[in-house]
Amino acid sequence: MEQAASIKFTSTLSHPLFKEHESVWRDTINKAHIKVYSRNETVLHHGDKASALWLVLEGWVKITRQTPDGKENIVGLCTDGYVFGEASLFPNANYPYNAEVIGERAVLAAIPAETIRKLIDENSSVSASIMSLLYNRTSETRLKLEQMSTMSASQRLGCFLLRLCHSQAGDSRVLQIPVEKHLLATYLGMKPETLSRSQQQLKSLGISVSGNTITISSIEKLREFVCNSCSESGNCETEDT
Amino acid sequence: MEQAASIKFTSTLSHPLFKEHESVWRDTINKAHIKVYSRNETVLHHGDKASALWLVLEGWVKITRQTPDGKENIVGLCTDGYVFGEASLFPNANYPYNAEVIGERAVLAAIPAETIRKLIDENSSVSASIMSLLYNRTSETRLKLEQMSTMSASQRLGCFLLRLCHSQAGDSRVLQIPVEKHLLATYLGMKPETLSRSQQQLKSLGISVSGNTITISSIEKLREFVCNSCSESGNCETEDT
Image (cartoon, each protein chain N blue to C red):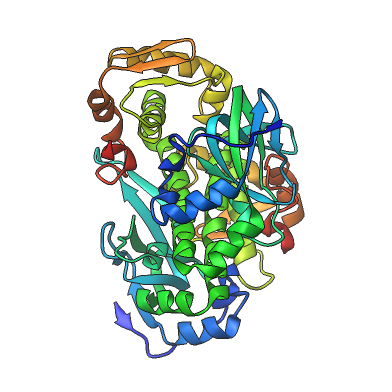
């Protein structure tokens, strides 16, 4: 892992957390430790003291947990603008998962726990934004759980793609997803062969996969296919794009 | 729905939210509106202005969402000491689900949104407790999602029972669950026939079901069966009992 003296903020502040009080957050992130990681490097371990809130500036990070009988569960796949390590908001808390870089490299900002907690103490509206972050995190997770029963595998893959289109900056509908197939399948709660079949099914909606590159020809068609089976329909962030 | 002038607080304050600042919360809940509902009465609708934070004092409430194509998803099954309606913490928010009473009757405390928001504004340590509530809610939901891949159906049923043993007051291991089989199955992400098979499997661990009554002869045996497949093992609230 190397330290980067400075970093260009491109789509960094796209996370909803930073929409309000943007100048406060920009100052905070400018003072954060910017770290550059290479493939497979561990960012943090389950059980480590939660010493920072992390923001992905570039690249991909997988968040995992392990069961005592040895199963690995992919809790999150984070890319540009994603936040993780919310345990750092609480004194004496530990990270409840592992984080490891996937893809070629990742650039992350680590906002020290003391900095973020001081910000919360001093600024009640920042505190409200953080509550909102935590509340939205629950809603997202609840929705993902719901989709395990209400959506088909290909609809779940479609929803994952729609969220990426929304969170990544620019109008481009060409996504780079350097995530190995078995990881993506585990994250989406399906077997690798089901993921392959789902990719095939999405072809008829104009979605093509070539290596790590996914091209989506019509967001509207994909939405029609996915969102009718989702209780968040009409109220979802992916519908703002 | 009838208004109750007063109510005896038995196991009411068992929720972790109330562990700190118990006197502040007791005052707040004493000033809350206590409402008595009968079977199938609707407490709130998805989309209603979130005007109160709800605490279950007695009985059972099911929390549901519906997809545009007509599937009902059981988001939560709440009983004594459970909190719902966290949307009320945020100005101009709407409830993201429906809540309806199941079982014979339910007694609920509705803490008005203004009261709870004033409490947060005036008392930064209450604000910290609320953040903790939201953070824990995400962790619980994330764990439930994980368990869909890492646990068998009978382990998921076992985990649900362990949580009930933990949250319900007293040493009794006789649980009353007035929840129809198809609801419980949907909540646990399985088919009703899988739930029946799971109940059969748990018999060998000394768990017997008779109507709405479930008797657990050995918590320790149940834990051995369930917790080895869970990444929260060693750190779970159900292990405190």
